[in-house]
Amino acid sequence: MTNTLNRIGSVNLLNSTLQDVTSVQEQLATLQTQISSGNVAQTFQGLNGNVENYSELDARLNRTDQFTTSNDSTISSLQTADETMSQMEDIVSNMTTLIQSRLNTATGQSMPFNQEMSDALTSLSTLMNTQYDGRYIFAGTASQTAPVPDSTVKPTTAGVPDTNYYAGSGQSMKLRIDDGVEIDYPVRADDPAFQQIFAAAQQALDAAKNNDTAGLNASLTLMQQGQQGLISARATVNAVTVNVQDTNTRLGQLKTYWQGLSDKVSKTDIVAASTQVASYEAILQATFQVYSRLSQLKLSDYLR
Image 1 (cartoon, rainbow, N blue to C red):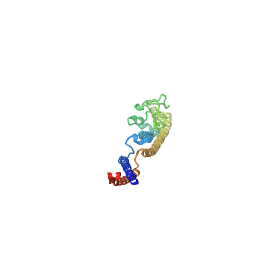
Image 2: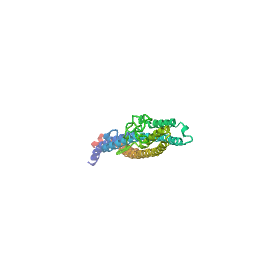
Image 3: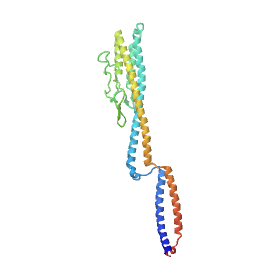
Image 4: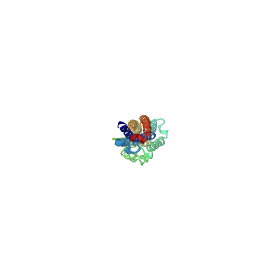
């Protein structure tokens, strides 16, 4: 009786062994696919309960990439502004020297002051119409409009700075550099420093025509104020540039962190998966050995 039970039990063991083989083969095939593709699953369904986490992380990564790309463009625009303002500083320094030279009683009246000052003012205006990526960077939100179309426009009152020369917008472009972080583009062509420079240049031109020493002295003072204001405005541009660069650095760090979390959810752990493959292959080998022994039994063995 005991022998009969053992033989009948062998039938159950054989069936169970075949089921185990099928299950292990399926799991082995899944692991091999994960290793070859590098992904835990080929569809969202395969991520089981991690779909929501993966989707959120993927959205964060995409958002970070968008901000980083936009900020890179902003940094380049700000660097263009800085380089342009450096050239402006040279021109304004030359304007200051011109006025000082014109005030020299020995040689001032013989120099081509008006021509040189007008040329400098034209060069300054050209720089203020600098574009980056098809937009006028000193025009505020009116980025498709040249901010200084005519360098000969005079203030309403001689020696009093105003924005008569300016054709751009009185509102600065907004820069969204991160979620919840928005800053203004730091400079426009109607900055008080530029107003002082334009007013000083026009006052100097009028005073030189009339040999008005008092007017030239007043224009020199105003030009020097504009010169200092330009230096301060450029420093602000540099400070904003550093701020955006720091933001991009932080975004890069966050991206690395979020990418790591996303990989834990969706990417295959090659070492762990390879170890599991080896384990399953060992199980299959042992199972086939059992199956081989059971399959050698004859029907008469089960009927005894």
